[in-house]
Amino acid sequence: MDKGQSAADIGSATAPTKFEQLKAASGHLKEPLLSELANGAPNFTEGAVQILKFHGSYQQDNRENRRKGEEKDWQMMLRLRSPGGRIPPSLYLAIDTLAEELGNGTLRATTRQAFQMHGIAKADLKEVIGTIVRHMGSTLAACGDINRNVMAPAAPFERGGYPAARELADQIADLLTPQAAEGSYLDLWVDGDLSYRIKPAAAVKKVKARQQEGAVFSGDGSEPLYGSTYLPRKFKVAVTVPGDNSVDLLTQDIGLVLFCDPQGRPQGCNVYVGGGMGRTHNKEETFARTADPLGYVAYPDVLDLIQAIVALQRDFGDRQQRRHARMKYLIQDRGVNWFRAELKEKYFKHPIKGMRVEPKAKLEDYLGWQRQSAGLWFIGIPILCGRLAGDLKRGLRSLVETYQLEVRVTPNQDLLLCNIGNAQRKTVRDALVKLGFEAPDAPAPLARHAIACPALPLCGLAVTEAERILPSVLERLERQFASLGIERSVLVRMTGCPNGCARPYMAEIGLVGSGLDQYQLWLGGTPNLSRLAEPYLEKMPLDQLETTLEPLLRAWKDAGGRRSFGEFVERSGRPAVEQLLAH
Image 1 (cartoon, rainbow, N blue to C red):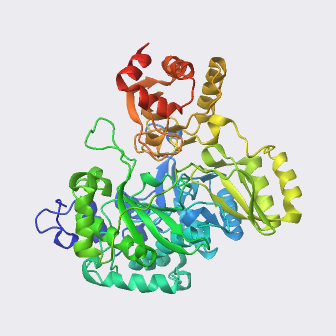
Image 2 (image 1 turned 45 degrees about the vertical axis):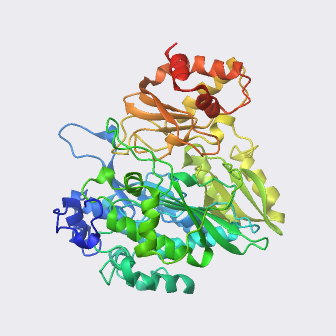
Image 3 (image 1 turned 90 degrees about the horizontal axis):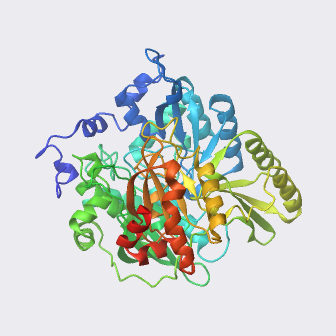
């Protein structure tokens, strides 16, 4: 829609796009998906594919199995909804079994703290999603033009603000669950069994009832916040505590830093708005962006603020150009001051104060043994690229099943095994050693915080590799660092396309697929994820990675390496860095 046009006016000034019409005509995300589920075809049509995303699934094909004149190797990727990355034991065991019996035998921990399953046949999709729901999981709104999985620090600490941050993430997830679409979801996957509806806490219900009021109301009584066309594009929220940037806070549509008193009681939140990583090569109007500070809001008003921001983006986000539809573009075009004023005038009647001072943030990862609470421990284990398969997957299943361990997914694609009693520590430690985790708190330095997207062969957007080659890329860089005598680590992220699923634009070295075995080179992010990197090379052949970086790495080493690599790049200035890269 045009800037300033409300959702209620869609169609009055500009005809709705085909995609907006599809959402409006879907019966709250039911058709044509329902009609196609049992038609015997191996794949869905394009319209059903778009509605399927709201149910947590993307249709893919294995591009390595494409043969001219033959049917594609169709399969579904399925993503769970798990606020804060929490997966109870029974749900973990269920998805592990489903992956073996009806998937491709693997699970993948994502950068948004959820598990993905791959290789599911269309004919098996109802059984897989239904099983997840019956084990108290969900895939609703894991994809699509709607609020996605809400992130929070994965660590199950029972101290400081961590319990309150986890609770707030759960509340936001429940608050932003679509109402009518949840009914459609249960109709499709568990034959309308409403006993599986998400049941928000009383405080959330009270705030959610206000979605029927004022400017927050969409005009659609059955879907009061989202309306029949939902949001212009995907929407992402994260919660954390002061100083913990495990959630990549500034890359979110809404980032919340929750302040608590010494007893852990929540006081209020610093609020950041307008972050987002997605962009398109050669489309300068698309760009990665970090969030702006909006202000500090008292805790009793935070949920009202969240749904007010969603409503504002619903009404003013661009519904004509999907690549311009994220809230980051609205704030970039109008400014955060306009955004704040519009919120306060129409959508949110409570005070928005100046930001509270925060300690310097750190990218926490919780690897190794950590005390959870009195008598309980958890252990963080590094899983490069988040892929679970083979002996590792079987070994983790055995531990979860034997000791009924809760699993938590981190934004770094690692796993936390939680609720380990004092008496169980030795046997769990011994089992993990057999799986190759002799020192889970000390992985290879470059691998510790490196992440990659799945890319080829299943992602339809990938232009080159990421997950499958990240280990070899890191090994090459480790050898180069050793030969140069560099002992410090660098934050590396890699994607197979510019959409930014592994958030490469925050890395000190970001590799963004731009052609077969070619990558854009982004440099200058920070180890604590506080600043955007910048693009320096458009199409760097991957086999030239070492020769391209060596003069810059040498200059960093010669400067004493006191600053992080990203800080060295930033302080050196673009002309000097470009000159070094050109050697």
